[in-house]
Amino acid sequence: MCGRWNWRTKPSSSAGSTSTCTGLCRRWIRPVAFSLIPIPHDIKPLDPSTTSQSDATSGNWDYLYEPEPQRIFQDLLPRHVQVQVYRALLESNAAFFAAQMTAMDSATRNSAEMIENLTLYMNKVRQAAITREIIEVVSGAAAT
Image (cartoon, rainbow, N blue to C red):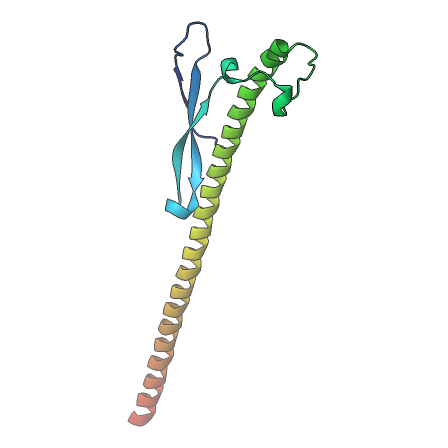
């Protein structure tokens, strides 16, 4: 139900760092095309070199972490990846059910239209049979 996942990893530029993982899942695009299209989801590692040191004069505060920040980072990074994969799976599953719901709605509309057309046809056939019987009775009465 959740669709196919295609994973590929991109090696990082620096030795010893983590690579980026990209997964493709389905996403429901209703306003555009009433279809499921593959959307890439990148799970990138956090780069500690891009974070700045806290500076008390700029309004940033230095917090005390327990355990140390490296330990927290090591514990939270796998959880972050798990949550991102789980979110993408949920979106894919929701897209599947949205497509299924739209298909069933279309089938319901088509069946209602078919019932209306068949009812009209049966009424015409019944009316033609009644008219034919009336013509037979009138022509039989006129012959005698």
